[in-house]
Length: 277
Image 1 (cartoon, rainbow, N blue to C red):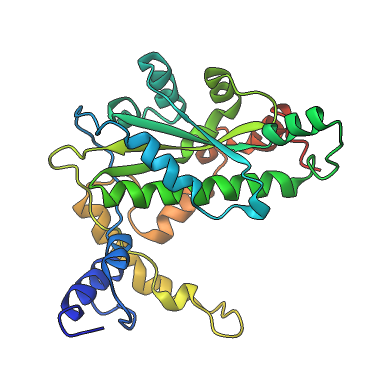
Image 2 (cartoon, rainbow, N blue to C red):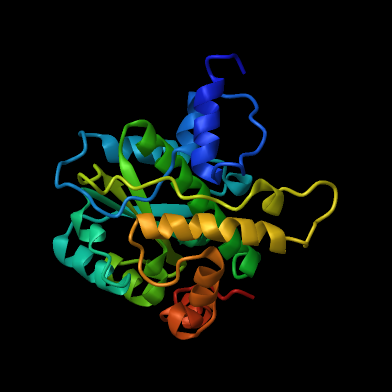
C-alpha cells in the first residue's frame, strides 16, 4: 500500500471495526474500499434506475461462482404494486419493499434440473437430498452478493430481505413458483432517500472470526469489546429494541415468536418440492 492509500484504508477500517479495533491494514484498492463501505439502506426515493440496470445486475450475479456450474438459482424481478405490498406484509411490513424501484427475489431453484432430467429421460438421484437445496441456496447467495457489489459500484443502495422466509409458501404462490423452487431472500435496490443513506455498521473484531490453525472459542472478551460499539451504532441510528450485539442475538434467537413463522420452514420447503433427505 502506498502512502496515499493509507489514510483512506485506515478510515474505512475504523468505520467498519471502530476506533482502536482496526485490523492491520494491508493491500488496498477501490474494490476493497467499496466492499468495506457497504451499508443497508431502508428508505428509497421513487427515482427510477437507468434502463438496463436489472440486466446488468443479473449479468454480475451470473458471473458469481456456482457449484459444479449447476446454476441452481433464479431471480424474479417484482414490479406489481399489489404483489409488493403483500411481500412487504409477509416481511413484517418493511415498507422499503414497496418504495424501491427494483425489488428482486432470489430463489433456490432445482426445477430446471428436474425438467432437464425429464427431457433427457434420466433420474437425478441426488436431487432430493439436503445437499441439493444447500447448494442452490449458496448459489443464490453468491449470485446476490455479486449483484449487490455491482449495484453499489453504480452508486445504488440496497438491503437484503431475509424476512420473506416468514412465509415461503405464500411467496411461492405470489410469484408462481413451480415445485423445486423456493425464495431464499429479497433484495431492494435503488437510490437512498435523503437522510436514509445509512451508516457502516460495526462488525465483530477480526480476532473473533479469524482463527489460525485451530478454532479459538474463547471469544467472550471480543464480544464485550464489541457490544458498546454496536450499542452506540443503535443509538445513533434510532434502532428500536435491544441495542448491544449480545442483546440482539438473544432477542433474535431466544424466542419462538422471533422466528416469525420460520420455525416451520423445513415443512414448507418439503411442500415446495425439496424433500431434504
